[in-house]
Figure 1 (cartoon, rainbow, N blue to C red):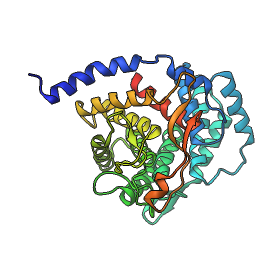
Figure 2 (cartoon, one colour):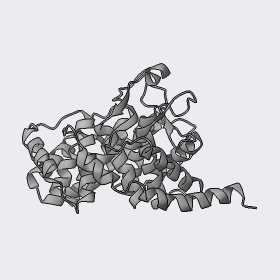
Figure 3 (cartoon, rainbow, N blue to C red):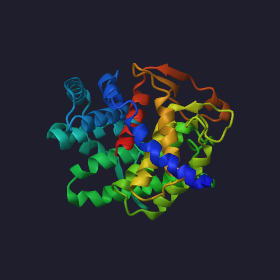
Figure 4 (cartoon, rainbow, N blue to C red):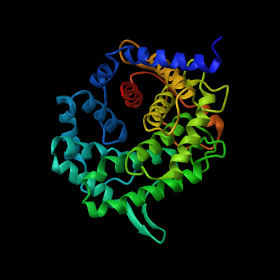
Length: 334
């Protein structure tokens, strides 16, 4: 008689390849349809990165034209809002992939502008005490660090490490989940997705030697596993059983779990089964025209549980959902 554990392993082994082949044109379909509104922010940067991955490192003409237009429209002074700063990752990619030195100079300028020396060493400035900015910082540093002169890179890495540790200490709860923000003691789904993706991105790149952050990521991902719904989705508020399933946290958690498996930070078994269920849940929330369901709208930090439970839910086209689903699709393909 097969044990429950063995059955779970068998399901994962057979389901992962099958689900990776489900809707084989999905990533390309989404990459062709999005972004609907190209903007100098992290969402567009993620979609363009997915387009490059699907197109041999090149952007399709429509996105290349949009990137050049954005490059020409940005001011000489980098923005201070991190969702916009993180979007400069697209300029760093243009420098590395296309040889666009003007775009690269913008990314380097933005990175240099937000590194400050403090009594405790280098720090990234302007970070809000939100999980969102944990991811934004990791994205900008991961893409832009290779463009810095080698002599400047250790200071930038130290700034990222100290800043992420500071955010993680302030926001991670004893149970492994993250509050969305200081003053927002709620385990908001996408907020936790930002935390896991940010840590995974940093640990897979510039902060590979940071054992304390790796321990925090493992704690977080293990806390997620028992909170996954039978439909494969994680909830709008992770630990509220009355909260509905939400697409972006599911796609982001899938990508972070897949990174943990790929880099050996977590073992298989239950993790592989959770990835398979999550991918099935993601696919179930995308229609034949590339529109989404069960997507939480843009969400600032809020003071109460009800604030998060009452956030608007998007059903239709959405750039943010496309960016996160493309991340999940890339994770399933590697």
